[in-house]
Amino acid sequence: MADALLQIDGLTKRFGGVVASDNITLDVPRGELHAIIGPNGAGKTTLIGQLTGELTPDAGSIRFDGADITALPVHRRSQLGLARSFQITSLFLDFTALDNVALAVQAHAGHSFRFWRNARSEPELREPARAALARVGLEARADALVANLSHGEHRQLEIAMALATRPRMLLLDEPMAGMGPDESARMVRTLRELKQELTILLIEHDMEAVFALADRITVLVYGRVIASDTPQAVRANPEVRDAYLGEQQVVTHA
Amino acid sequence: MMARVTPRGIVVAVLLILLVALPLYTTTTGNLFLLTLFTRIIILAIAATSLNLIMGYGGMVSFGHAACIGLGAYVVGILAYEGTPSGFVQWPLALVLSALFSLIVGALCLRTRGVYFIMITLAFAQMLYYVGVALHRYGGDDGLTIYRRSQFAGLINLSNKTVFYYLCLVLLLGTIYLVWRLVNSRFGLVIQGARSNDRRMRAIGFPTFHYRLTCFVIAGTICGLAGVLLANHTDFVSPAMMHWTRSGDLIVMVVLGGMASSFGPLIGTVAYLLLEEALPPMIKPFAYAFTAVTGIEAHNAHEYWQLVLGPLILLIVLYARGGIDGLLAGRQRG
Image 1 (spheres, helix red, strand yellow):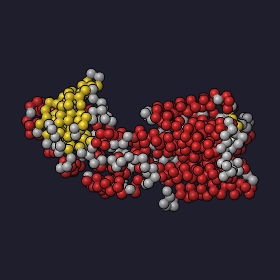
Image 2: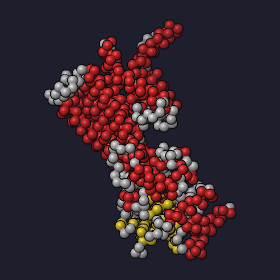
Image 3: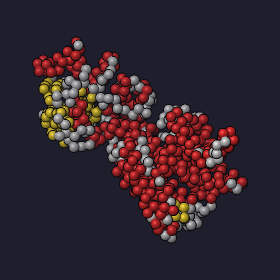
Image 4: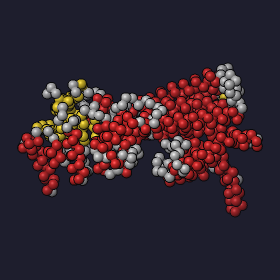
């Protein structure tokens, strides 16, 4: 696909005898919200790890906006506009919410070898940070210590920090993990808005959210892509029903 | 730094006033011991403040920080011995060498974390310690006496104890101010972010290694300055200055006073060195009473004053995680 923002080609990662990513090939066109689903242990987080640069693939390549980023370190990918949120909340707990987001702004405002001026009173850092907090509905909590925020607020802050790096693409690793129904609904609304302007790769267990948001869905089982299609087609795919959706029914009925 | 009047603000203000006024008292009473003691306290507070920059704000627990004290001191000692007493040569050279040493040590040990980081900094410091022991020309194990303090072409006379005291005090306050500016700047927030969550820092686009290394070098350079001052203060250098237990003392001072606090290291150094002086005489009456009651000989009990200091530090660490400064401010940080 010519206009793909993210191109994954033949990506393979092994941990000992386990093949966590088995020759994954996948294109995410600009503007698409692409969801990746799969049962536990399907290799979703391993895939995200390779996309962000925390894991090195054994084979295959990753191209972002035409450039090969397979060997780039984590911070370089972020600077190119590939932002991620973490499955397990990963924030600066002893900072305020605004400080957290302002750091993300700072990361993309040139180098930080500036030793003198008080960074907490720089409008060019604080204002974009406040804007990012407002986008996820956290502006009222800007000055609260992150350690004192609720789980749902942490998840929102995760998104705000990814947004503050002014990315071209978001990699969201289970943004709704552990959320209550109200919080989930709110996150779906936020993601629907973000979808208008950003390319998003979404990994999520909440099937309702995935089918409501995704333009296309890729199903991963044992590290292999078994389907990559529109939500309707994926829902109708017998192999997917067998491997994944059916299994979840078994789990919920047990 | 101190917007409201808090117990901590009062203690810091009183402490600063006492430090500024101390030479007035010592010159009128002729009590040189106090002036010497407090010059030493101020110099070690500079070293502790620099350690706080990497340990308190940066989360880099260096167990070899005293190496830079030794390095700075030996530059002064060796150059004075070799006939170059000029401070214009000694001081910049000491700072440059401390920076270089920190750059090399940092570049290697910042690739590791936690206990490994501590052990590698310790190993490098011990290496330097044994280099000092091996310098037979400069006294080896016994150290080297400095017969002339650093000369500044008559601009300032370091042999005048009051002048030297004020020079050290100005450098200490300058260091505290510098570190305070530093930790609140963009650079400082990156350092603190990397302490809090290095993985996230990289994910949002920071090459944290470069920032941490720069911080490590800045701290080492400031500590080298403390070494320069210490050599001029004691007119003597020896490998013992960089022994790992000296680095341990610095860590205790920072933890005791309060990590990641502007004045914590100063408070910790004052408390630590005053306890070191005050505990032995305080133990003596108890030892005599003990002997009188039980008949067991205990007259040298004051030599074991560290038996009292140890539990005291333990109490601070267990019950006041922000150190003395944290207790005064009533905050839970550390």
